[in-house]
Image 1: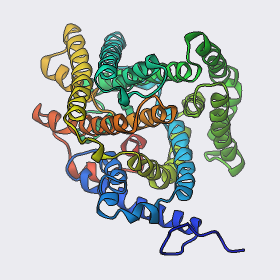
Image 2: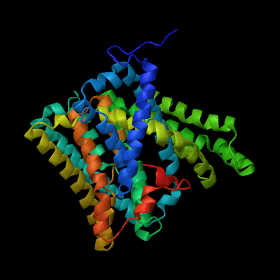
Image 3: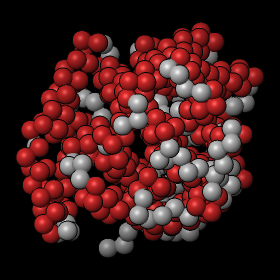
Image 4: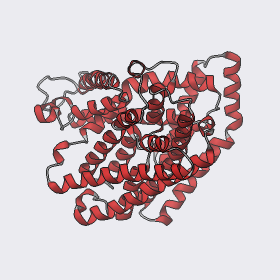
Length: 437
């Protein structure tokens, strides 16, 4: 039986053939741009996100309008979106594995204060910005629940991308320094606070009220308790198996991945979101270094090479720079940047200085905490799918994520923290933090 062709496609390709062509194109474009920008001291994720944007209406759709129907017809987009969601789930599984108690060893009391202030101030400013946007451009926050949109925008402002930050620290030889350890600790705490906050906001957005959100949060908390405490004996057996065998047989590996996927289903059913289940399962795995590194390497090859670029492309197709067509939207972009950069930097810098950190290190920490990378795209796609932000606001926030991540490297360079460009361009396979986003 012949596969159905895509309506309107001049190439006469089946939908599966078009999906395969799209994936091949996406992989090549994203990786070439990622490698190119890495040579200029930028995290590869910047180029990969840009690759997704260039394949969308912002460039390819503008230069060649028929390409959207030819390459990204609705039937094809549905299949690409499924691939991107699988990549997102496995990426969150990787993030859960990446967080480790070893990241909480750099001046924990000071790091806790910096993280808390670095989350609360951008959160408050983001909520304030949302309230202002509702008055000036209500179409940017289209949801019926204005409070949900405000809380979501605040959460998006408060996030820091732990994997990107780790990559920047590695490129500049700061990973093992006191500043690097403090930055990792702050980012790990901030990441955890950010995901908890996002879970609460998603529950509130779906239920429409605080009372309606409590059951979802309660059930998700019970699932987290079961994974992190109840399954500890089973996880100990997994660690024992690896210590004895020094490898993961196919059945054990299949059970680990199946557990991550099923955990994602559970948190989706509780009313939060599937990304939290995958994250929690990764967090629940034994903190045994060789085992985690093995799982990371096995997962990264598929996720970072194939599935995440598809996620970037889907995000790029949802990003339209042409939507910034009026002075009002331009002012909204400037306001988004001012709140995102100012809130994170000022909160981090002031708390670091009050804690006794020298001025140069406090400045560096402020710019590091401003990196958002792929973590921001994850949050933005959740908000867009929930209908609490508009495609135009999505575009503004994607630009903010790119700018705040891209500016960290040059600003650190001005402070004297210079990157090793050769090392930045070719990440080592033995270091998961070097390849994660």
